[in-house]
Length: 205
Image (cartoon, rainbow, N blue to C red; front, top):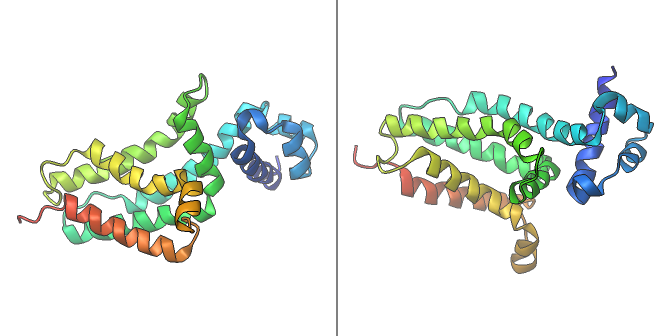
């Protein structure tokens, strides 16, 4: 098995799936752009749906391994702020490095499809639970307000991060920039950190 060939197929397929969706991107198109024989895709992935999931898994595995080091339990506000900032920086960079995968995920999260949605969630749920456990550790340590609920805080934070990607076209037409603009990335991350921390940090102790 040639790892380089397989990775190239996944890379090309990710771009086409992001552009055309699972149904719109044909195996023949993927093979042509990847400059491989159609039989090679069958050899490595058996069917198109498996290749589709491999594109997501490739992203999820890398991101989850990275988050394991960042999202460690916290006991102090300083540690919480530092780790949340590192997490935010990693996610912001994803908009430019992994934009096609994000587009696939956004599309799938909006439409439940039998045999696809459950498999996708199985791949990315560990990421959600790691962030939730991180917030829960901060609640338990009284770093965050006792009124905070880890599940809700996680959805709110991820929602604020994902919205600029989900509304990219509208943001470009209305404001003239997107998350791909470095200056906007910096300003957006600063604003998000300030607003979020002001809302959840326990300032009583």
